[in-house]
Length: 285
Image (cartoon, rainbow, N blue to C red; front, side, top):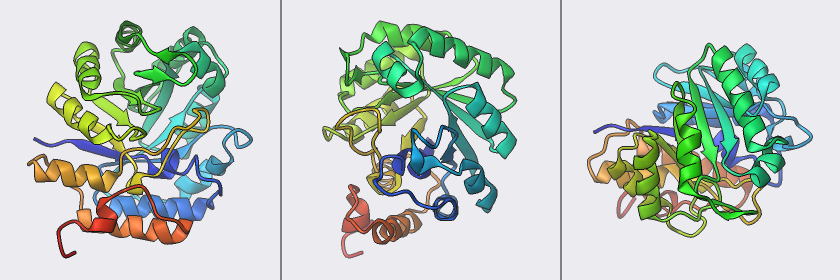
């Protein structure tokens, strides 16, 4: 079995960092991930710089990327203007995010769920690129608490032409919940945070339920500026170690990925949340 791992570090990983890295450094981060064999990298976010300053200069990031065969480069959009910028920049895939609750949607996109869903429908209809639709706070919302799985199932069913990814934005899900919702929505992908140390068990549960697309972030970087106390994504190298050890092919060079996390540690000046880059890919590494 083979899965697609999308490293979201250059976007979701860096958007919650206190400092903003230059577009050239973010492009180098993307290049390192592609060199490590990541089949998909989320390279940039086409949002307003005054709301997420860490993502400023998205077009400059994309222009500085050294494209590598075998890697699909994606970007995030939250509205039609963002999509127009993303398409003009020349990326390969669009990731459009739609929240499952009104409270989170208004903070993240300044729209209700219905308004955001209508926007998503218009963008998907216009899109000439493959579209991933990420349903954020699919398992729980920091403002409204637990989310009714039926709401998420209904949202996912409204977008049959998009690749659906279920996001545990604040890291509250457990394996059974993940398994049930992947099966209920037939979503091919998940985006998991490790806030309560269930992220990797949730990834295994999603795999068992049929998911084949997994978002992760090099070094376990990440969080959400609109979700209080949300911590990082599951670490890409930890997920690769887990999957490859169980015979699931990822196509990723684990040693190169570990080296990228070590580079990030030096760049950011702090220890990252991932485990494998510190412990080594194998005892004695």
